[in-house]
Length: 240
Image 1 (cartoon, one colour):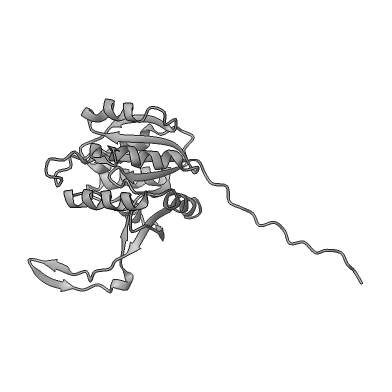
Image 2 (image 1 turned 180 degrees about the vertical axis):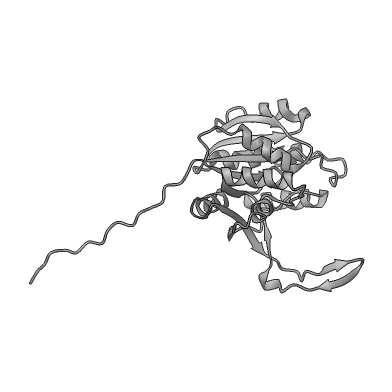
């Protein structure tokens, strides 16, 4: 009897490409009732610090660029001292789309994947970052999302026109991660076409590219209103 052990060939593991993060914090917070949400305090420190720190601690992220308003360049640069992955704090543009482009251009030439994150999502966890980057590494484009709980209505002029099947709807979060050349090309094409895209996935989708959806996190909320800020503080207290 042949007792020679049969061994299966080792499964090839796809090497994760070098990923840089662009954290966008250049908005004017028009819905915050006078609160500067970028610098709003969460458990004793500015919101932007919590967002950046999570990316700093995530192994798959190799560089971080923060895009912000001109008046916050120095304060945020000071807050990021000691976070060695932060390679630049740059001034944003007149739109989120332009700010993302400026952030991408500030990443080093070594970067192959770009993770675009809202600065106002301070409860992002490293697990969501990790699985989104890994998905983008395989698919070229990925984003986290959570199922929609409410029934959504398409409304025109105050009249309901359509009720989409809730089972097919998901609320997309950030970071949204892409092959960097793909994202740069998609944003350039959107600008040339005069198209306003609501997020970076939309720009890539316009090229006919598919975006892989991964599991998001209900706590990964975007702080847009004073109520959101109160909710973020309660969630953070619970997490800590």
